[in-house]
Length: 101
Image (tube, rainbow, N blue to C red; front, side, top):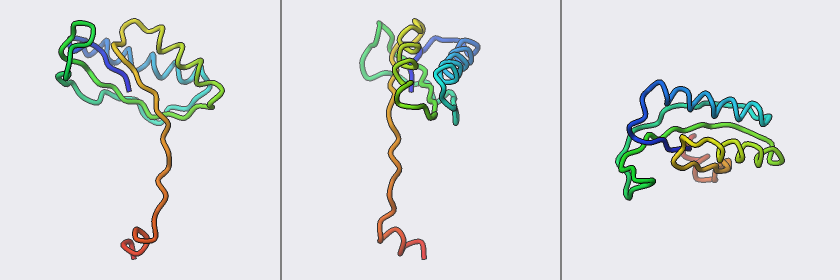
């Protein structure tokens, strides 16, 4: 997930999404999806901005190549903030299996 300033035009948002996809590809990862999530008012100002555009990408990348992707994200001056998290698969419990039957 990454944040762009709230006044970012739609064309610049699409460019940002393409830059992130490119950074994932260059780092040896595979993009599942990358999209505009929403425009929202921030709880507190970030870099004197009170609104932000939230973008979300789901991708897979080898952990040894993750620092390379992180470096590319830090170099993008248009981003207000970004966060990379690890998706952990949810294991089905016995109760879930019974509920599906």
